[in-house]
Every structure is written in structure tokens, then in C-alpha cells.
Image (cartoon, rainbow, N blue to C red; front, side, top):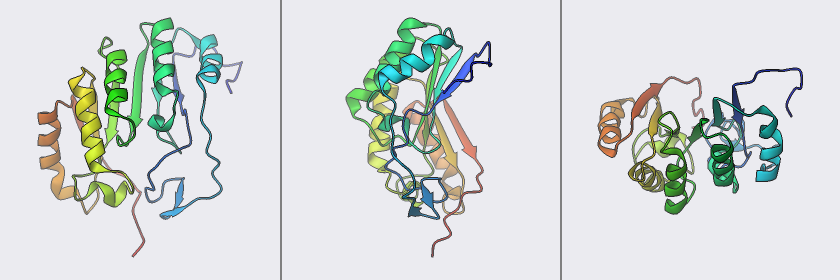
Length: 200
């Protein structure tokens, strides 16, 4: 919950759920690739979101990003964005996701909500191509990621492609950059990480 002594907050990060379909190695959800049974799956509702955010408005930015979960696993995410952009039409929305969750309709609807703010965006965390993305983003379906990203971009959404570089995908950076450009991604970034898969 919000600390009442903090004043003049301009940006907040919201983790709307601890649910995620992926099992990325060294994520807090997994312990070296094995499911962490100590994590209790929880999800914010639209009413809880309103209660927490309303006292802070107006805001410059609301970022939906997960430490444990993927924002698209939250059933009320669309309604949270819709409400936030209605009550504060200048607020920038950022979303970080593995990209494989949600329907084409949902992605088009999210793009419709965000496209009027040139600073709002979705970061798709795509760590390679169809033959390598799943090596780190375990249980993330490449075809669904591409389908959802295409639907979102075609509907007018601004998309960023973040690629964590590993030994198994570093040879694909140039090709991924070309694919990102051809698909209409606004930004393509490579990132270094200490996360690795140590299982043999």
C-alpha cells in the first residue's frame, strides 16, 4: 500500500498480478528453472486499483510491469488502463510483457486506448527468434507473441522489442532487429542479464 508520507508522486509502477505462464530460469517464480511453490498467485481488481491510484492523480506515468507476474495475466488490466486514461487523459501508460498472453481482440483494444498518447507503449520481451526465444522464455509461445505484437502494432500501438542477449541467441540480433523494423516496432533494444539457465 501507499506510504502516506510520500508526497508529489509523479510515476508509479503497478504489478497487477503475480500470475505468469512462463518459467524463465532465475526468475523469482522459479528456482533455477523449478517452480517456486512458495509464491501465492494474487491479482488486483479494478476496484482495488482505483482505490490505490485515485489519491495520486494526476500522474505523469503508470507502468504495468511484473517482478513475479505478467501484466497481461491480470483479467482487469484493460479496465485499469481504460479508467486511468479516462480520469487522467495526459497519463502515459507503459506495459512490459512476454507478449504471449491475451487475445488478438484484447491487444487491439489496448492499442486503441494507448494510441492517442505518443508516449504510451508496450515493451515486448522477446529473447530471440522462433527457435531460441523459448530457451529462456520457457512456456512462452513464439507464434502467439508475434500474433499479438502484430495485432497491437497494426491497431496503432507503439511497441518496443527488448531482447536479452545470451550465448544461444546473440547470433540472431541483426535478424531480430530487421524483423522488428519490418513489423513496425518503434524501438529495438538488446540487454545484458545475469540470468542464465544452469540446468544440464
